[in-house]
Image 1 (cartoon, helix red, strand yellow):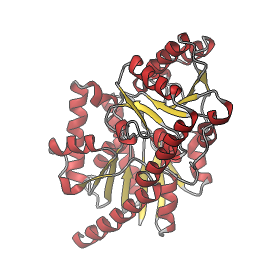
Image 2 (spheres, rainbow, N blue to C red):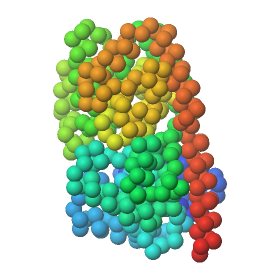
Image 3 (cartoon, one colour):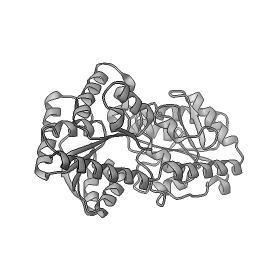
Image 4 (tube, one colour):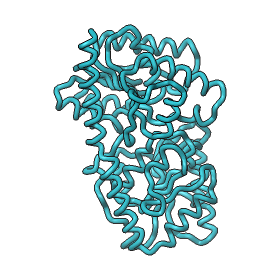
Length: 376
């Protein structure tokens, strides 16, 4: 089969879907990545895969521009003569479905969180919900969801029938790359918290900084790190992040293609998100490395944590609730923190193994391709 993997950035495809493409290639399939070009498009090509540029604005809402993006994607699909499309991210899912109307290709969208639009509600949320209903109900062969809340919402709204919906435990994690590592505080004493995310307010960055400030006032010597790209268009400027660093509240690490090495230097992964997440990749990666997790009691985030066993759930938008959870971690003896990390690793192996996720894709592709051939 010839399969396209579609998303709104090449960065996303390289970091989250490269292993899936490699596995599908070992099964004899031909793969092509489709996304707007960015520096990671070259990395996909260096890995031996074709990449096709798709003109798309990640946050644009101009109707004329968006229709042009759909038509450009439709032309890409026609030129590639695809058997199947695996789509990701809201625009990737909706526009892939629209571009495939009238074509026999199998469409398998992945709903990896519903994003800020669904969290905010309003007319735009209603529009996106209507587009999902139009595209997925009529065009998708099967839909993967990364958390139970999103799947239940789509089924209840009549967007998808239960027999065409399936829950996957996030994107999965490479258990060899993100191997169990000892907590550094066990030997050096000083505890390090790490937040890995796109640096936008919805990920809980301001709450993280305020919790760090409160712990500093109490005399804590813990380190509070941030890893991720700043998004100047979403309310957190690089200047603001630098100001927090100059104040001594956080250490900004920039971005990295070697996330395991950064995580190995941390003791606890934090993500106080109120974004409508799928299952946050950074949290399951941290858990796989034996890091306890502190995150919010929100869809997707709560799926990563067994509260009190592998980490904590705090209230969204509450710096105080986050501070309390971080203080509990700081108050634990080193041996208890390590034991919690070991339980986090065990849970990650049981629930988030990337190879199991890839197996589900392989099975779904074979099943629906067989059905498509029968119906041809």
